[in-house]
Length: 524
Image (cartoon, rainbow, N blue to C red; front, top):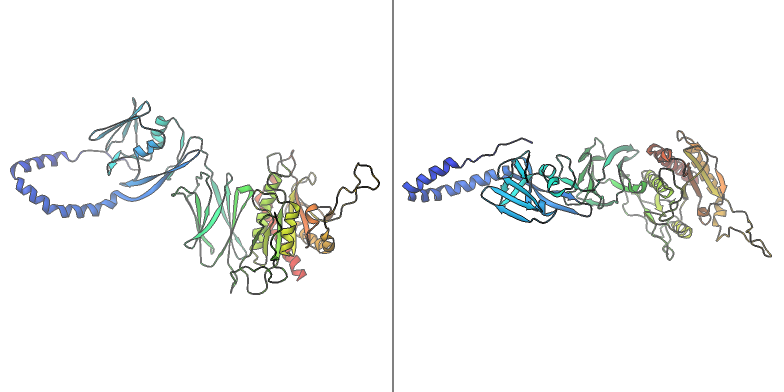
């Protein structure tokens, strides 16, 4: 910011005006009438140079957000002083003279002079980068008042990045993020990595996609990112209405947008995809074709499953793939030494598999679990069976031995009738099947498992087992080719870094998608 000196240029003109009043009062009155239109015209002409625009400045407190109008005066940002102080407490006194203002904030006295940079706080003096101004009757202070003087008055710490229009007060720790854009086969994939969990809701506004980031205080490293890409031109952060959001601008019209939150809310994945020619924009309705969901709806008490249909060519509805993220809600599953939970890790993996499959525009995707819920086995399989999928994949993480990362694929095997410790005339099985419809699908499931194992073998650094059969409860009642995919090692005495690596997760999700494509092609 440029420093400017204050001054009083009106002294000489006041002397001349007094002399004119005494010698020719009639001339003065006429002159006032004649020059008034010119003064008004000059004022209208020069006014925009003084206050070019009016934005908001956001104050983030631990339990609230407040907005104040931000005014640009001679190229510098200014805030209304009294409104700023009222955000932090009540004023105990105020004394205003011609060019001086004294404010008592609690027991502390603040003294300012119009057009001067020095501000007094009790017996101390602070110099601002720009002078104090008076605009429309309001005392205005430059933005650096917030860091130079305000902490002395309020005894609270503040965090402010020069050039931005937001400040964080007290113990508020803002979340930040990094951005990456990758090319995919028929579009681009945006990855936004947050430093903490966020909640994302999306909307389409004026040809752009807006991703609202919830109530978290957010401080971007960069306010905008620009891309040389045929699908995305820029990503911009905005919170001027007090709502932190990301605004994504597509490079062309007619593109499809598929966002999803992963890693328990720390990663936002979004695919921007080009639809094929002559796209049918409406998803298939229930009852259309063998792969359409049943019109009967979910069973009573079943969770609302999430089914998504990418743009598809006219014709039969696309086949359904069901992705099941194990555990959820209070059921966290396995845990690593560094606090990674199985429910979050597999949700992240499912999110990436979903995007990889959607980018092919060959499948509809149904998720049995989204967010912090834990559907029962019956609810998951009911939702899956109603969709009549061509494949069901459930994802888990745990202890697969000392190697990490480690990948295993399981098909279903009916449990042996193990005998409980109770006595009686007949042995009681520990595993009592509800209805083992998967038994009729075992050969198809084995083919799917082999396809997955073949693709996983190309994941660098991963140990991959041959497919095995096991009494996996999540597979027992699925009326479709079904497998369980488990990654490891996720145990309390080991950190999960090899499993949470973005490269590993991306490669596993890409391999999963490729295996499903190959499996579907053979079954067609």
